[in-house]
Image (tube, rainbow, N blue to C red):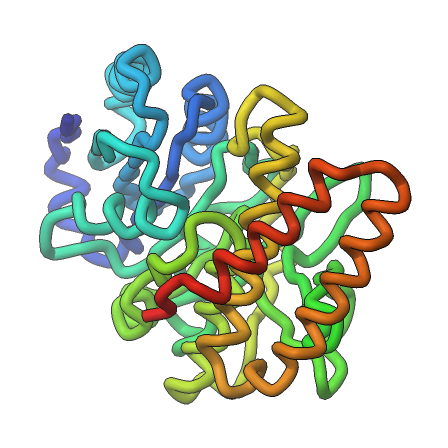
Length: 310
């Protein structure tokens, strides 16, 4: 489904306005998608924005809601494209499908945004200008989450596999990266990386992207734009059943960590340490009687060891 807005004469004569693609993956959160898109439209500035949404819900009702959202917001963007994935293909493939749904010539800047994000401050046009002038790096934005403010970046400790919010440049052994809730990069950077790696269903996509860009020559690491801000609610896209969502999240968090470590030389040597630390955690869970979560950890580790990584 495609909604294109006709250009005015003034717009056709102005080639200096940055073009931005906003990629969104929906999983039963059509209301949140509309809230996100309205906030983006309100902070577009002079940017010419194409929105591409992939629906992973496998629910015709959700697809109908997204199409209704596209109808309501058709005048706010250059185009709104809704793609039915027909199956829940995961976050990485969903974003890649959203990018593939945009015809050539594609926009100059790629923004990946979760449905549970709202833009609070700043201009997409200013963000796009910064991205275009920033080379091959990935940009984060100021993020408010859990009543705390951060720079939208996190860091991975390879010994433990744990991630924490990054407030300064990562220590030497740590890997700093832009959180997947809202990240921006140039079209050239996105296409050079080949989008997100589809061996991940959920989690670690942005970590993998950071490692691949480093291998491609991005030595600067992620950059932050402080005068553009979003609020990240978090957790809305994993489903509405909290217990089931927790079990699924635990499984994929462990599966994706193992795949990440197997894929990259920088982390591969730490894989035995990661596995040992995860099994120590399983024992702790078992002692506390949290058997379902313990089983999810073990299943995720086993799946990560068996899954293809290419």
